[in-house]
Length: 404
Length: 133
Image (tube, rainbow over all chains, first blue to last red; front, side, top):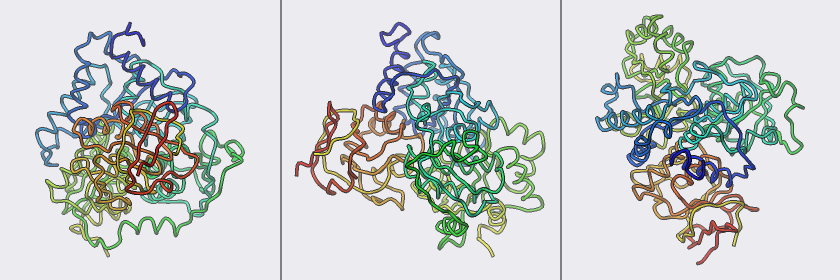
């Protein structure tokens, strides 16, 4: 492969992987069964799209991925782009990127909740996933083995069928470095996200592995999703253990390490985290449910909350292309949109030219129940507010005023 | 001189911009204007163009793996990145963009390098950062 016998694209891929693996101390490669590519066109830019297009001129046997390779959310929902006031150049760039990935043999699943909708990995399965929320859920809840694989490296893994063996592919890196004793079990999804954000800040960097004790019940998949996504976002953390719940930590002794230090997190910390975003904001311009994409259960929760109500400011609900047809079939999309909401599929709000969308729509103050989204959007010029789904809906139906 | 555990790219010189804070191209930067834009970031409002960024840890999601390449193509880039702790995304992004980065020190590098100092980053055989003036 390094000599170019399988074409220049696979040659680039293996050289890229060797460069990354050498930096991070990988001794060899590990075969992977799936790859997941994050490649929204805001991140790619014109340079990234043009670089990818160059490879599509190769014959199919030289350009197509070798293992099942799926895509993270795109930068738009073409059916609703006008409502977001996205510009034609954004859509044209998206179409070019989609054409590239199709030519490379990527399955355009356009989702960051593949562990809920496509094919959850199994314990011990080595994969090359490329969305932090996907990686942390797969590692922690499923017991799979992946590092954060950014777009180039996930593409490399798809092309070579392997990835450098470092980090969370190795037993040694999966032991806890931080014990978090939780004195309050969250109830709402935004509280799970707040807890994830707090633990992420305590952890501090990618190589830390928190072990959480004290959660008084088994969280649902959506609760784990919000907890993990926020933990990965605030801390760049890729693996957590929840003792007695997640598969590698049936007992604390299963994952404890001698150097592990201990921190306590209580309800006051979660409230302070939430209030740090609501301070001095009396009203919002838009409500967004996204990051991660909504499950079918979340779509139903939102439809139930909106029944008989009407949102008088924009309310966006972003889900996956796999959930959307079921939401349509079950009448959830119609219920949300009858109440003034907009259902978007196959995209993610922050991956969709969030700065330009803000400027085009005159939005600044944004309410969401996603702690991950609150962490990201400040840099895009938003003032994000973290609230429960119910309070977000109340706010949308009160013209944006945060009550009471 | 402070030695790092790993490095890639080429030898560069530049003025250090130092903070005990994280780095993510998506979370922290206005990549059009070339400034740190996340209000909570300790470098909020400061230009990163041509500076040697000396920061604590790689943060955030996976977008930086593409964004360093995209920023390099437009010339809206720091000169180099010097971190106490990397994540794989920074390494993958630097590899694609052929960008200079070193990481992993025996001390807190953000406390060791004065903000505004002229520094040299050498990612070669023994990766290191030197204060020149």
